[in-house]
Image (cartoon, rainbow, N blue to C red; front, side, top):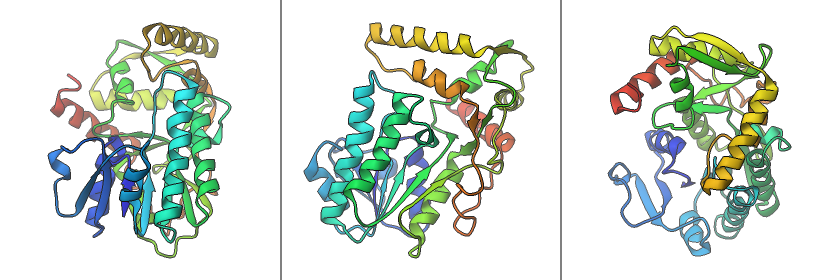
Length: 312
């Protein structure tokens, strides 16, 4: 079993889920001094980077399953997104085709890939899916998680920080729907698919929690406020204002020369009305069934944030 992106947010949940199933896991790390929690007999570390063909060869050699999660969620430019999320997937696919042709390759993409016209991030995730399919002729499965949250996640920490305000701005319309999933459920689903020797290749599956039809933006923020114990007023934000803020953020990020989560593309993703997951898109229930709903998941996440000092 080989995994890229194991040192990221989702990887912190996935590696324990894989070792709990009895897998021996080989992970790619950027230096020779990995975190102490990876130093277990079930986890082998391979120093290197996604840009290095020799590192990828050592990582995937003779693996029976390869899980590709490495990628950017924020970048300074479209070129940077495509260079990592698209070209990185191409190099990984080529390495697996050459050194582990009989492996089951699982590409962990994003639900955003369903609408690549919205943002450079979404475009790059679709490009990554296409690159894996183009370079690896063997058994390939693509998983598209929606918004993932949980312990160690800094991206959705902003939702909870918003919910501490006395007045909480709510982007998106009341009819918008956003699917969510707790990182533990996402990791369990990926591990379950990896364990299925009969899983067919050539499939694209979406993940979601116990409500695949998704949540309205206000419902998500209200659940965050409940988990925090706050009672804010909610202020709807018109879509044009969200888009304007995104364009302003892009200009500011460009001036600073630093990547940021919020941008013009992210604003378009936010106001997109349909991030629900349909039954035909879902990973089959015979493989994995989510168990964590939004309220319980948010409550446990807030408890972890507070324990770690990320929230007051």
